[in-house]
Structure formats: C-alpha cells, structure tokens
Image (cartoon, rainbow, N blue to C red; front, side, top):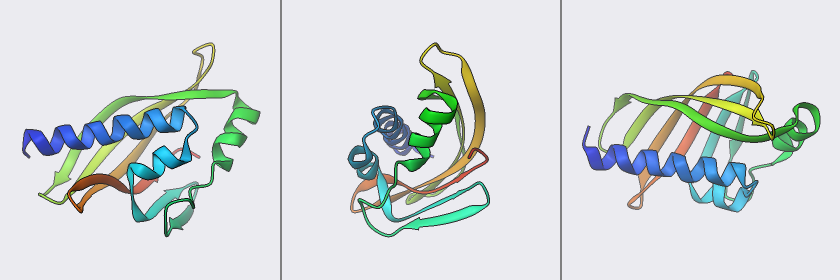
Length: 127
C-alpha cells in the first residue's frame, strides 16, 4: 500500500471523527461516499444521499450514557487496492470527565471516488 493512500485514508478518518465529535452531520457527510452503509446492532441502514445521516444515535448516547466524544485507538489496514481500503478500527466513547462508556471494534471500508477518499461502509460491534 502506498504511503499516500494510507495517509489520505487516515486523514479522512481523522476528519470524520472530528465531525462526529463536533456533532456536525454535514461535515460527517463530507467524509462519506454515498450510498453509505452502516451495519450495527444487527441492523443495516443505507444512507442514499448526503443529509440522510440521522444524529439520533448520538442524541440517545448523550442522554443515556453521557457521551461527549470519541477517540480512535487503532486503525489497521487489513486489505486494500488502489481504489478501496478495508480498515479494522477500534474506538472509545467517552464522557466529558473522560470516563469510558465503551470500547468498540469496527470495519470501515474507504473508497476512492472522484479523486477523493471517503468512508463508504461501516460495520460496527458498537450500538
């Protein structure tokens, strides 16, 4: 894997996490490709276009768990070619006091479309 592809994918994930922590659905959309698939909690959801990324999960996490932000722990490329990267990720959800809500494993698929890397699919063991 070329260093430039790896760096582009990591930068995309960093921007995605920053947008999530800012509770900014528009900025999250900017780091995704559509249709975008999310598979979590036994449910598959397909966001066909930007603007369809509901923030209700994070509203519930804030209300029920006191979620304040999340951080990447690990990001490991498991498969790749010049247009698609499968990345095993691990992240932690935290409260404002830095206490841990949970640590979760996921598989993110990033794709290159129109010269830009974006998250195309997320399969998470988190809620």
